[in-house]
Structures are given as C-alpha cells and as structure tokens.
Image (cartoon, rainbow over all chains, first blue to last red; front, side, top):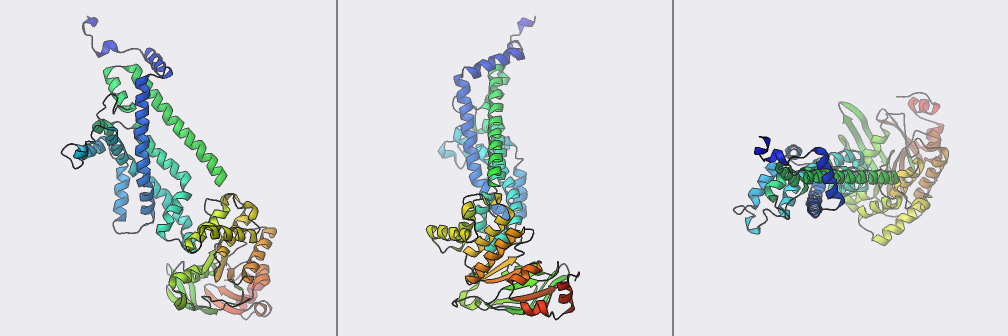
Length: 245
Length: 245
C-alpha cells in the first residue's frame, strides 16, 4: 500500500545517508556544488563591497552632520536594517521588470539583479552600525580634531580610518546577512540553474524536491564559509588591534 | 630672537562662561603679551582648562570676548591656525607617530608632502622620539604620547601654544623631557600659555602667572612677585598648600 504512492516521501533518505552523500559531493568537488558556491560568494561579496562603499561614508556623515530631519533619516535607516528580504526583492523586481524604470537594461534574473537587491539589504546595516561607531569616536576626537583644524567634513575619513577595527565587524554583519538571505535573490534572480542559483536558493529548492545530499552539502559549505570569514576577521582584528593600540 | 608677525597680544574682555546656571568663568579681563611664558595656576575646579578652551576658541563665551590683536591682519581662519592646544589627555590617531604629525600638517594645507615629512621628523627629533617614528602612536608610553602630542602641536609652528596640564600623572624623567621641550618651543619663538597644578613646575617655567579661583582672575603678576609676595589671601593660602576654593 505504501509503495502505491511514489511521492516525495519515498525519496526521502535517512539523515546519515544524506550526510554521507553530501560529504562525497564536497570532497570530490562536485561541479554543480562548486559553481553554486562560487556564484553565491561572488554575488554576496560584490553586494557587500557596494554596500560598504555607500554605507560607510553615509553612516559617518550621519554621525557628524547636523541638518533638519536628521533624526528621521536615522530612524528610517535603523528600521531598514529589518527590511524583509522578500520586500527588498519585490522593490528591485518592480524596478527591473520590463515595465519598470530600469526595464530596458534587461537585468532581471541576472546576478546583477541579485547584487542590487542584496546591496539594498546590506547598506542600511553597514550605515547604521557605522553611524553608531563613528558617533562614539567623535565624542572622543571632536575637540582634538577641531583644534587641529579639521572641520566635520574632513573628520569623516579620519574617523572612518581610526574606527577601522570596529567597522570590520559592521561589514561582517552585512556579509552575514547577504550570505544567509534567500527571499530577495530568489525573487529577482529566479534561481535559474547555472545562472542565478546560489547556495541559499539551491538549498530551498533541493530540500523541497527532496534532494537532501545536495542541500545538506551546500548547507555545510555555507556554514564553513561563514565560519572561516568570521574567524579570519577576528584573528586579523585581534592582531591588528594589538599592533596598533 | 627676532620679532615676527604674530596674532598676539591676546585680550580677554570680561570673559564669562556659564553652564547650567553656574558661572564657571566669571568676568576675566586680561592682556597676555607675546614675550613671556604664561602659567595659569589655581586649585582644582578654578576653571583653568576651561579658560584655555575659551581662548583657543573650542567653546564660545556666554558673555565677554576673546580678542586677538592679529585678527584683522590675518583673518579668522588664520588666527585659528596660528594656535595649537595640547590636551591633558591628547587624542592620538590610530596611525604611526610620524603620521600623527604629517596628518596635522596636511590639515594646514600649506606644505607639500616632502616638506611635511621633513618637518614631522624634525619635530619628533626635537622631543627625542625619532626612534619611534614608525611605531603606532597608541602603543607608546604615557610620557612618549604626551611628547608626541607636543611635537605634533609644535610642528605647526603656531604663534601660541596652549598646554593643559602637560605633565599630569607622568614620572619625573618624563616631566623633565616635557619641560625641556616646552623651553625649546618657547626659545623658537612660540608663546607658551599653560596650566599646571605642579607648583614646582610653575616656578621653573613661569614668567608670569594668572591665578584663578572659582572662575575669577585674582592675580596677574610676574612670576617672581607672585611666588614671593602674593597679593590675595587665596593665592597665599594656595602657595602654602592649603585647600582653597
């Protein structure tokens, strides 16, 4: 009776079996797995790079600038840290879809679209954390820098540089969100095999199809990558901090 | 020592600063000339540091005025550039000792790169720190950090150098090095205005004394006269080591 329904249930394997298969995929350097992991890294790192380029100076400027409505901008950026990825994905989808303002560029369902969506998600995180770090540093530095003749504008790069060890953490928080995120890139990337399939979207897909070894393998790779990046940053930060005081 | 154009003398005209209903600097009037080392003395909380900050323009007086004779000739921005202040706890940037000085010089925007480096190296050598030029400023000892801060201020070749408790909490060797540096800066033609709570240091360095008590200027006399024949009972008590204020 049970064999009469050859559905998803029937293809489900035991956890041990899946883990062993996943391990085989990793150790043999399975092409699909390597490609997916590489694309994931490329998209997320590019997005974090763009977000840092915008978020670091934006956060520092918000820490130092005094203008009407500054409080509102800070609240909005803090709130955007919690922007649901699917909503970010929807916004970018509308922008890039054929009828949207950027439709003619044909970017929808490309890695570029995923980078845009992730940049939108990560920038508020980096900007908000940077604002906090730089504002704290400014209370320590403001008299000294003013005395030396640095105005607020000139102080921005100085403070960013002197806060560099703390800001690595802000950028890592951004990278964490980018690497872990599914909703936005699924909506704008479409999870197309070989083109826009990333670790998270693949895990979602393979799990729902019941192909647990690939999903589990990707999950392990994802965890290891995130761990390695954070460990490297921690070691680098600790060493540099000790050396630079 | 040949005379050069300077922003001095400095005139304080009923200078007053109040905060939270408390008058911290109370109607100080004085003229401070170019040709001597001025030491501001007084018990804790007399307003010594506050007076330096007001003179340097870091905070605005609530009443009265700070006037520089050279204000018309040099313009406001130049008057600010022709002063420097060494804070009791100077903020050193998280970069090398040498870079701390070249940074300050670059803010003045007058020297080329090569000149900045040459002048910074001279400034380091003049306080005996040539051997730590490439070391991160924040890992230097307390006395070295204070000397670096003095070298950084002196490298700007200001008309006036304010020093706020330059030897607080330093050991005797470090104190001697700093007093030597102050004498050398004075000899090079920079006006010294400093605070100290160390009476021995005041005797060694002062040409004239401003004695402050509870925000009011009680005496402004040549040092010898102040130490031998104080005019006010408060100054006499202060010199005896009694608690005043």
